[in-house]
Image (cartoon, rainbow, N blue to C red; front, top):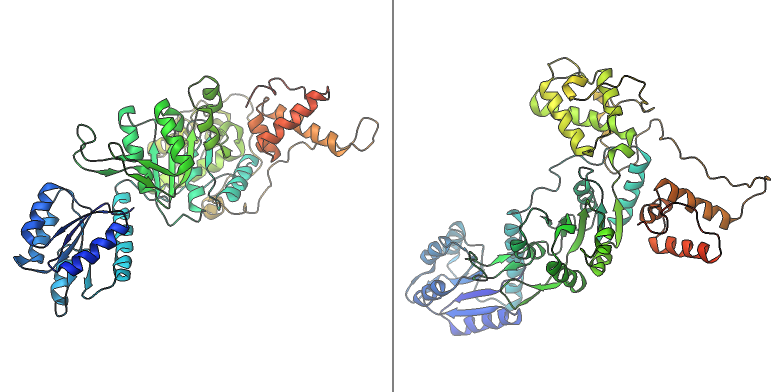
Length: 495
């Protein structure tokens, strides 16, 4: 995040010209002032990102002018310039709000070092207005089901790269949590993590949220503002519910993803950024493309590395693990000591379909903890779930006890010792006569099984098989051309 408008308050023309050349090389707009009166006039006309302020000026003390700068609505960063014998005055200026100081005589390289620090500090200030701690949710990835094991493997592969990741899944499955895990394990984890919820911002404001705006760009734009792309420079930007953005903005977003550059609303200066993109959606984005509601080129630009988050009903092995995890959290939060779940509560949770997925389970458990009595287990009545009358299939792995909290933490590491998840039914390697099947036949059989398991969804089947969607399409085309199509309903038209 570079400085765009700089005010140089320095009475020595040689020093002022040297500083001006330094900032012009950085493509900054520079205004020079030799006196406090000229500086006050410049401040009245415009706002500035950075002020280089000499302490001793012909018509007054720069330290007093610093107080005027601190009172501005758009307060600039101030770097104090001081000569020999004025260190104490410079320190007083820093106590009054200056960012740093530089001693005369100084070299352009010294200025470069200070400016680099100042730019990083300014970005941090801007980011802190939007950024919550990426670790504030603290859930990690809880679960030992085959679906969660596969999800961890995908995260471990893609996190260290700069690839764009598209995370899809139903509402409440934890798509944002997956994005945060990718960020935590990436080389950019020390840089900003900026989120923009595309569904919660009005269409008239979302372009400004993305790219920022200049002062006066529209009614109410009383000051220049950096957008989310600019604030995420060198870090990661999460486009949450990206399917909700309008067609015109999709075209502008495509350009940013391709060129990593944009202009603010109302501006003409091209800004280049180095940002990793993560995107989420609870919609079938490919269907939106087919219906003409989403650009196909933007879809393929976002869908570099697809990650599908399974719904909770497809990972029943994780329901009680998650329930125990949330129980411990909310018992601590609300100061209520509960002794686990009653058997009726466990049966009720396993029988329920959880249309709201993990988020619904989390909310149900918090409510149940509040309604429960100290020293008593949580009941199905407290959960607000019906108790099934017939038998309920319970997971084989034991529920996690209080003393095993670390084991059930479920963060990205190898699963703790315990009963392994049930293995999928093996693919047959022999034919009806007992002969060994060829590799090609096994391959076709595996593709057929994956498509059957995903109801013909090729994207999900490719993920299960560990191949790209393009490879799967090519294989299906080969089988059709050979007159041996894979006989799975919908396999040729669902992705």
